[in-house]
Image (tube, rainbow, N blue to C red):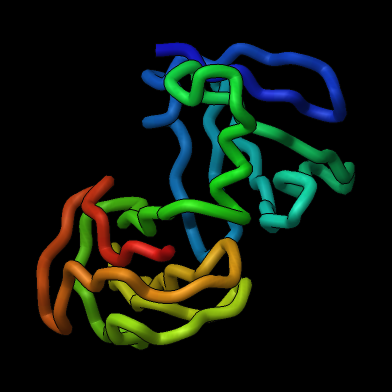
Length: 150
């Protein structure tokens, strides 16, 4: 499947199979392997989309998913449900929220240890916790839903 991404207003098509070349190394920081080169990208969710920092350059990005029927996929940052997923296999060290809790942008939700590093999964928008699908000590794989925000 292809995703349409606007980077500084310019469309870029990304095949979802390429996403396995992106790994979160710490919250908001990603290692991207592209054409044999490695890049570090810092990403911060905002109401306008994603703010990215790459090699000292600042960019904005908006992701359009064809399944959204033309709707802005980052609109999920403001409304609807949002799944917080494990970026890689690991072990849940600590669940920081409970169902019904209110959360703010950037608030920690779950800490997952992967490759001896602890990664704190954070809320990309304000809202409330609809569902917590993991407990302390659980083993997770990449893509497992950890928390659902509403």
